Length: 81
Image 1: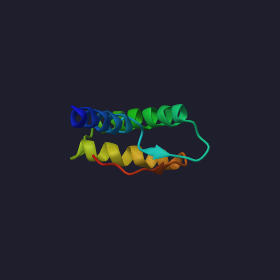
Image 2 (image 1 turned 120 degrees about the horizontal axis):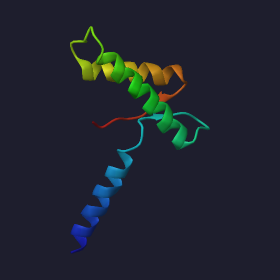
Image 3 (image 1 turned 180 degrees about the vertical axis):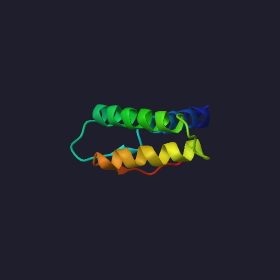
């Protein structure tokens, strides 16, 4: 019984950590990071879904999102997926 509960707790702790934006900036609240990430991700998604289409839209969207967030002064965090 206890190993099952422990497994569920570990799973939910990891799942909760995976929902945060993979960027950080000193002195900035999490809500601001999430808003900036949503804005950059939306702009990057629009760019890759507008002709001419890139060969790798998912990879290009990630590169564009990273560039946008770095322009705003954010640093990337470790991404497992």
